[in-house]
Length: 87
Image (cartoon, rainbow, N blue to C red; front, side, top):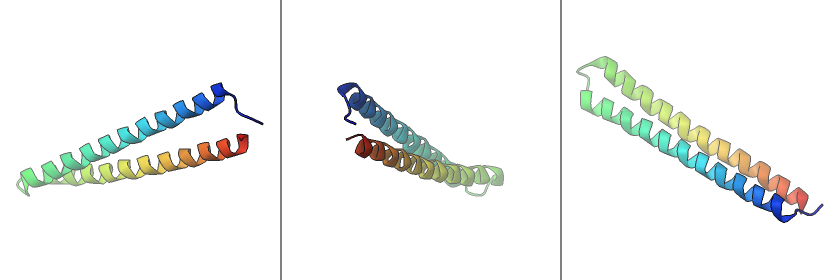
């Protein structure tokens, strides 16, 4: 079953949307990590609750980055599988 131009363009739009989504996950993850590091460094044990908030920010940032890469690779694999089947 051969893909027509409309199907191929739809797949390209899907790929681009996934890349935008991955970049959003990277941006959010890095922002959380940087914010967490700011809290850790700025308060430096003076107010312990803010240091904990900083560590939580770094942890959530790492989780966001990891999930973003996982989601992108999973979707890319699915799209490649569909494209190979259609051609």
